[in-house]
Amino acid sequence: MVSQNGRQGNDISDGPIGFAYVFRALRGRNYRLFFIGQGISLIGTWMQQVAMSWLVYSMTNSAFLLGVVAFSSTIFSFILAPFTGVLVDRLNRHRIVVITQTLSMIQALVLTAVVMTGSAAVWNLILLSAVLGIINAVDMPTRQSFVVEMVDKKEDLSNAIALNSSLFNSARLIGPSVAGILVATIGEGLCFLLNGLSFIAVIACLLSMRIAPKPAGMEHPDVFKGMKEGLSYAFGFVPIRYIILLLSFASLVIMPYTVLLPVFARQILNGGANILGFLTTAAGVGALIGAIYMATRRSVVGLVKILVIASLIFGIGLIMLSFTAVLWLSLIAMSLAGFGMVVTMASCNTFLQSIADDDKRGRVMGFYVMAFMGLAPFGSLLYGGLASAVGTPLTLMIGGGLYMAGTILFAWKFSSVRAVMRDVYLKKGIISQRAD
Image (spheres, rainbow, N blue to C red):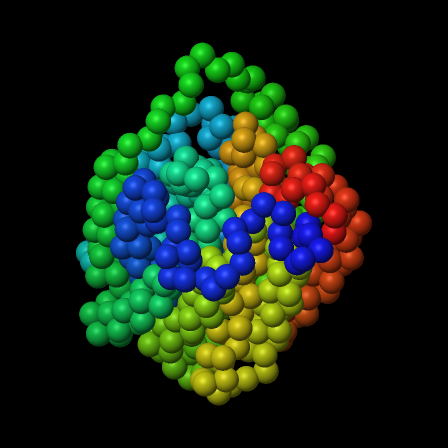
């Protein structure tokens, strides 16, 4: 909590926040290498995501099949994430990330070959999306938990998570715009090829790291017992349970809005791949602003209030998008949605990593990925089917409205565990024993 003079118990002294403070996690060599490699690779990832959406829609003209492809790429996060979370807590995270990034590169190069040889069909695009989904089901909880090992100082963890978000959304500013131009002039295949090549940078940076090995001789329960232990911990501890439930609700009712962006670009804005790129880039601008804001925060204290505000902004942005057919208004709405989304996700991530026990962090982040990515395929199918029935604008409005209602319920329920959170903050050293 805060003392009577308004300062947080053991936080850094007040004063102007400089450039060095915002990027303080980069002082560590390992995290700096990760940041550089991911910065290059994520541009390719965004190029592939936009190119894949446009390719599927241009081949099928079906919002439902867009949802099916998105379903195939994320369903395995729902199925496998609880198991991979157990493995993350017992295996070498550095080695796992190297393997998953290498497999992601191979997937992108195979996709390139399929498209450039004229062999692309809905069935093999779904299959390749499913392969990437399996890889990501292992990669995401591992990378999330690996951040702790890359950061030299524990107090820089929240900054590193925020910088990850800023990196992800900086790439969103570049990747979709480049993809829109390449798709319109050359074709989707080059986007997939450039994504495959971009993995070379992150793999090289990962191999250049110096990571301390895990202590030998640690005993672990079998996988199913470990998963049960993680499930009991995550859902038995009320603050973690509420955060995971909010993420799950977001994945079902608001996160899948991106599936409909190709439909919105063509049917509502009467544009092509370049307009889709503009929409995605606008969301990236808002998201980058949100990520930079998160990087300036000095403590996890007060993060839940920010999470609630950001979630409401996310819903407002989506409702605003549903009412407009003008490009510049759509770009503003996408910026609001992007800001709300990244602050919401970064807040949840930071909160969970900050309060989770060290020996259970991998399993908690497995459930985080399951909630964030694993339920998204069901939301994608829901959005695709609903948009086919009632139209894209009404689907976006329903999603935004439902999420705002869910956020208000979350804020009301979470207010009842303030005393529990204070005890956790004291135990973790986040606050000191000062009177409020």
